[in-house]
Image (cartoon, rainbow, N blue to C red; front, top):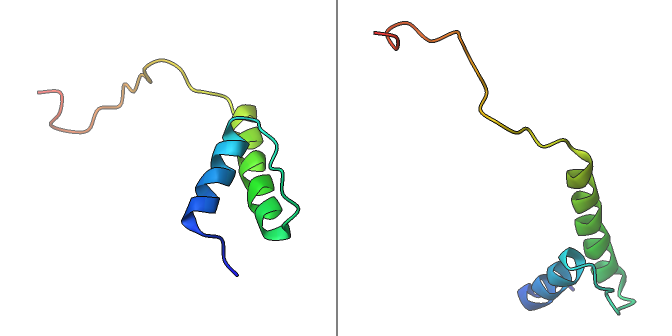
Length: 63
């Protein structure tokens, strides 16, 4: 049986706030682990800061 939107929201909140799930349902656990893995991957990626400088302006934009 698919997860209800209410349950999906509760699992999402638990995963994003670093709470435990408190359930042994395999479908809920897989969704929880999927969100946690996505969050861990986002933490590993570097954040690009600042304004990118692009000196190659398209034709007509510099006039």
